Image (cartoon, rainbow over all chains, first blue to last red; front, side, top):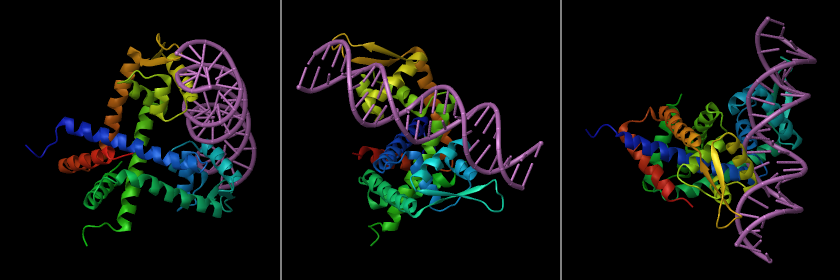
Length: 144
Length: 144
DNA sequence: TATTGTTATACTCTATAACTATA
DNA sequence: TATAGTTATAGAGTATAACAATA
């Protein structure tokens, strides 16, 4: 009888998870704004840190329509953060990548996110942190 | 030597926390879209479930400017989801509340969020769930 | 004078539909 | 015909600045 959770327990867990997520995304949004970026533009930079996707692939990563990505990449290009290079093999396609300035801003953004989120973890002890890492990684590993 | 975390550990924790948060907010956004609501409008309904704030207070809860709330409440009012009543004491002020339709949509939205987020927890055992709840609630309790 | 809320304006993000160029 | 990407269009969300009404 101690091995199954009450409905009330899963309620608490879901609420805590959603509330924590809004808190974290709030921090990330603030970091973006501090760097004169929208949340989406910061996500674009983060995605491009370890990929040079096509427009369609970038749309897939962001979960938005391809037509939206055209504008996103236009504006990022105008700001000198990304490049759009036509594929020489399939000339319909294009690959998107970071400029040096884009790379630097992506790096700074990631650092600022860590700085901004870290205070949330302040009330956890080292063992708690390790346990939370395990649980979140299990959760991420089991999704979809 | 087992009591302090390595830098690398906190890196992993921060990444898992941010990634999980994007996952969860993604679910909430999808629920909003399924109900023909933006994420912000769904947040408005959720906030009004247990409050009847002024426009300024609602702006505070949402973390946006008062001027943005005027439009949000305009559109929600046009859809019959919220009411805006002028305060009789301080006639500059207004209180925002849910209509019956707004209440029902807020309830349905909360239920759909739980249904949508629950699969993320599928790979966790009951004890894991209890531990994660404790950790997230500790995290939320210690913020700011 | 200060506060509450609105309006005007400008920008970003987003989707849908129609289009071009390439395959 | 099908696919990759763009453009045109429309609407939501956002902030800043200026404003009206009330305190």
